[in-house]
Image (cartoon, rainbow, N blue to C red; front, side, top):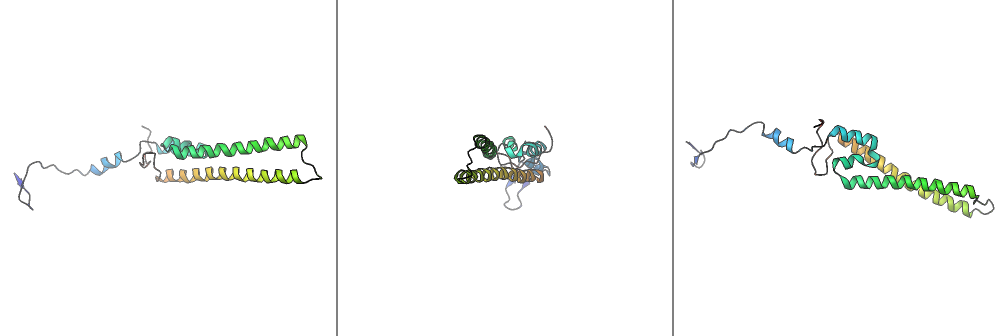
Length: 150
């Protein structure tokens, strides 16, 4: 029988403390998502937010996908309108009103679309660097550090 040196009570179940408890605890606190796959998705489809969907961050992925799709659609809509204006010869050189209005709309659409595209690209680059350095988290708040395919 063993007794507590501080209070003198009898100690019944003594179990040795293992040095491997920290490693087992760390393994359960790591995301099951693959870091390499997240990096590859971030490189090839990062602007659209596919890597966020893979990591379980659906809100961020949805925001990126909507911004990217909206930006591309704005650019295509502008080009269609531009071609229609050129085909109809709507630009009257005598009155600069149509030209000025068109250029104003052109720059608003263009800079809005480019701003959204730049946000998507820069955001994907920052997230890719975080994943590469092991500082990214999945949708459950667990760090993405696993390189192996399970």
